[in-house]
Amino acid sequence: MTRAALLACGILGLASTAAAETVTLKVPGFRPSVVVPPAAKEGKRPVVIALHGNFDRAQWNCEELPALVQGRAWLVCIRGVPRKDTPKELNRWTYGARSRVLAEIDAALSALDARYPGRVDRERPLLAGFSLGAIYSARFAVATPARFPRLYLVEGSHKVWTAKNMRRFARKGGKAVLFGCGRKGCGAWSRRLCRGFARLKVRCAEVTVPGLGHSYGDPLPRRARPLFRELISDDPRFSAVDPAPGR
Image (cartoon, rainbow, N blue to C red; front, side, top):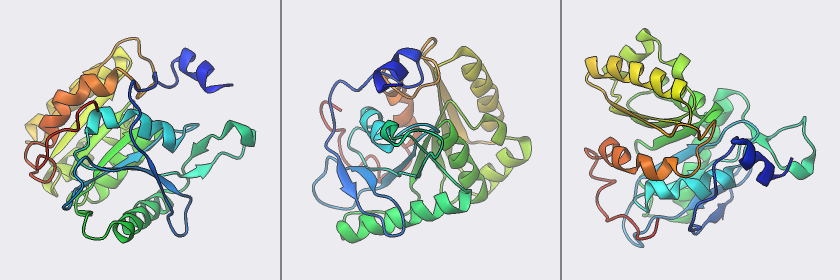
C-alpha cells in the first residue's frame, strides 16, 4: 500500500504544510536517526525524542512533530528496526525489545552531542510517542520518571497507566503528561487518566481531533500546541527561545 493510501485510510495524518529542515544522524550500533535542529543556532537546547508507531517511519514522525515543538528543542526521531514481514520497498519500521529501544535512545543522544558539541542538553529529554512508541515511552517514564518527567503520548499507552504506575511516576519525579487522540474513545480514556494524575499533582491534559483516526498527523500537532506549551512551561530550557516562525 502506498503512503497516499495509508493517509486516506487514516493510519497516518496529512503531511505538514511546511517541511522542516532534517538531518540524518549516524548512530553507532543502530540505524540512523532523523533530526530536526532547533531554531536557535547557538547555546544548549533540550531534546525531544520521538518514537514512531508500528508499520511507520521515523521520517514521517519528524515531518509532523515540528508543528508541535516549534524549534524549541532538538527533535530526534529514532529509527527502530525494519519489519521483516513486509516487502523492503514499503520501508516500514517497528521496535524490538524495550531494552534495545532505550539503548538506541542513549546512543542517539550521545551521537547528537558528539556531532554538535556544546549544543545539546541531554538531561531529562521529553518523550513523544505514537501508538507502539507511546507505549514504550510510558514504560520508560514509569521506570525512570526523573529522567523522563514529561510525555506527549498519541493514540497509545493508556493500559500502562495503572494506579500503581501513576503513583510511581508522580512520586519519583514525573511532571506532566499530554495525551493526543484522533478518536473519541481515546479522548475519553485520556480524560479519565488526567483526573487521576491531577489527584497526584501531575499536570495532565488531552487534545482530541474526532475523526482523525489512529494518527499523529495534522491538525493534531497544531491543536496540541497550547497544551504542549503548558507541558513545558515550568522547564526554562524549553522556553529560552521564541518558537520558530512557520513551524
